[in-house]
Image (cartoon, rainbow, N blue to C red):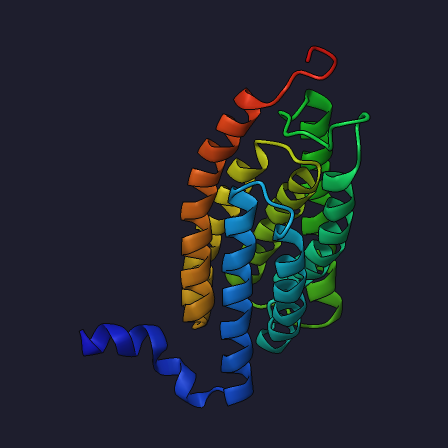
Length: 212
């Protein structure tokens, strides 16, 4: 057991205490955010804003530029999503959960490609391009860009997109030695699965606009 604990958490002995504290705060805020998201609760966004601001700073320190840009983008999408979720679509209803249309899947794919390419140039021009890890980071960046855009628009399938990104991120962060963040992504992957099932129930129970 001690060997397992050493493997997972041993690298933290060389880290700044401030970074460890910030990572733990970020993890707690991220967990709260995703739990509120699973419940279809607007509080997903304030907790998300806190976690993304902290994570952006840490990711810059860790040389994971793609994920850093993701979190800056998440911050922007949290503000956008906060507006969309509270916007009235008629006199009595706010924006409802809906399924992704074909055009929205196309936009999501284009977002994925554009984000991945942008992160490649970011790595290249800042001379931080490393091994395969950097390219995996580019892929997850694109996936999370698409998933967060769909979440902000309250689309059911955003959970599936985020699930894929979270699963890929778990070994990436373990490999880089950031175990708390890796465990967070494992937790987020599990929540994404159950979040999809929960939102599907909400979708089936929602009123049909104009037929109440």
